[in-house]
Amino acid sequence: MNFTLIFNDKKEIKSLNKDTSIKNVLDEMELSSEIIIAKKNGDIVIEDEKIENGDEIHLIQIIYGG
Amino acid sequence: METCTKCGNPKIIIKRKQSGQTLCKDCFVESIQKKIIKTIKKEKLLEKGDNVLVALSGGKDSVTLLDILDTFRERNIIDICAVTVDEGIDGYRQDGVDIAINHVKRLDIDHQVVSFKDSFDITLDEIMDNPEHRGSCTYCGVFRRWIINRAARDFGATKIATGHNLDDETQAILMNYLEGNVDNLTKMGPKTESKSLLFAPKIKPLREIPEKEVGLYVLAKNLEVHLTGCLYSEESFRGEIGEIIKNLSKNHPTIMYSTLSGFDKIKTALKNEHKNNFQFEKCSICGEPSSNEICRTCTFLNELDKKVVL
Ligand code: SF4
Ligand SMILES: [Zn+2]
Ligand SMILES: [Zn+2]
Image 1 (cartoon, rainbow over the protein chains, first blue to last red):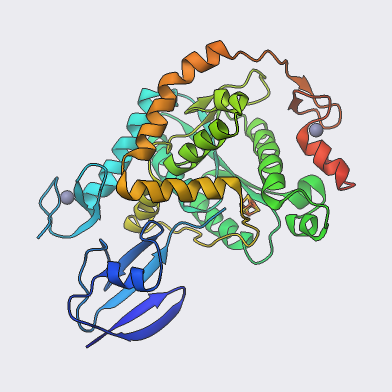
Image 2: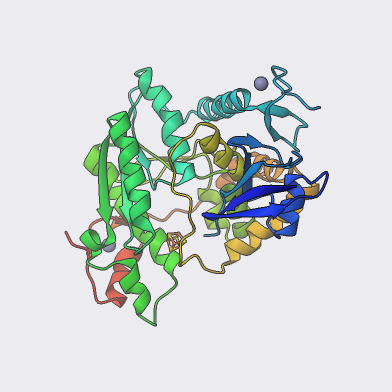
């Protein structure tokens, strides 16, 4: 099982464990959910959303310092 | 499974920790628009016939601001014009300027792009080459305000609207409070009237919207925005305060709202108690209003061996 992760113009295929949520991915990448909005297969989703086999997850940073 | 609190749609895009509300895309967009319009009415930010100058950087805050104010223009309540400041930051600012231009073309709005170079004969990049500089954001803030005030007069604007959001406002309140800067605190608020007739009042229609929800709004509405950080963005006291508030908000999701509403309650008392009577005079160099003989812009330019290009 795997999913596609897009962040900062980089696209990578990641392996997927059962019951992984967007929040788990953010935690693993040490990104704060306060500054990121996630899209799953093109639709905006909340961080509790579960990721399924073959999903495309796009993380968009909307808050920058300064 | 969670569904939209308002309409039952299962496709939710936000779970508001502060209220427990979950919203779908359409209901979220509507809630933001309603809330901003409520702020505008409650604080009397707009009057019929206003010509509102939008400070449009192309970032999420100013694009959201323009999007909402345009609904007032569509109903013939106000006119809108826009100014975009080009600080001269290579590899960063041009994208924002292009996006700003796309929006004003789409909406058919009068627009000026004014650069530091045209106004002061120096770009921010050139200022930062000087080892004696005072910090990028200090110049940016002071120079930008100078340009926006002047543009407001050029356009005959009756109001200047800026995209300050709830995060910006709570950061400023705490920062000024912790620094004991009561003078600055008294100047804050949804609408700042200057004593000088040369300055148009400034309004902040987004002050009750958390920054993250502004970001969500532009994504939900598919508005084109410039989403990148400035390379000069520096470690600052404001940044540290921002971190603290974000961390506190995790377990206390209403903290920004209560900081703002608490401040609003003491604001009038603060203003009455702490009257500052300084008179506005004109800067002897550039002619802009200034409480000193020479304004901050001209003071900084002097240090850089430059002058306002008149
Ligand atoms: S981060 Fe600082 S230097 Fe960069 S655009 Fe903002 S105010 Fe200017
Ligand atoms: Zn709904
Ligand atoms: Zn001056």
